[in-house]
Image (cartoon, rainbow, N blue to C red; front, side, top):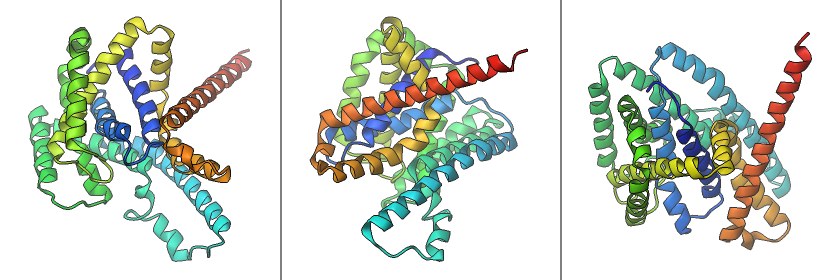
Length: 326
């Protein structure tokens, strides 16, 4: 993969909006089942597709600098929320051991979903970089082995190394597709792929049932989870191609959003899963949380506010640069 195109950024922009929407939905909502069947697999595959092999040390260093800093910043938000909740419920404060556990690997930091995703991405990148030294075939065999292992597990194991292994085949598929630049034929044939990929996604997603990469929930079959991830990714690329050609300002909007997903990723979860329910509870409007129109409206509002924040940051940076010029 030698270059990046706008279509993939549009797909990421649409995808991050679906991620926000998905975390506002509830377990029994059909839209939640559909979105979870492909949204995290799609991000893993697109990240793999755009991955450029580099030294493992560079990957780990960059991951530590960018991802783990964001991870602990997110953790601080979690701790602040915990204090608020404890004060509100007049519960006893956690012990020193409780706070120490928060920073441990098993039941603390990595239990925050966005943090785990970023960590898993670093691991997938590092492992792929090592395996690619032996050629794409070695990466393919390793991904196949991970798939067989995931298929063999009969019990859910919600533990970050297992969840990362659950994610690796998706990333590896993206890397292998990137080697052949397979997004380009999808973009050329987008009209022919749009309806079949969506129909296939709908069928496989609802046949397989609810899935969750982090929580180690494959539905009826991990193999079907991979299929729904592939179909969802093909559909999103095909749809994004059509949007790029005919969407005008909407295409530009989602392209811009797709280039600024990081902050949304690490902050949206607490907003969707804590702030919104807390506000509804304060106004005795909890029943709104399960209404599709409310979920969609809040999603649009949050995406708008994020974009406004990004634009303000960009304007401030531009102003600082202009003032710095002699």
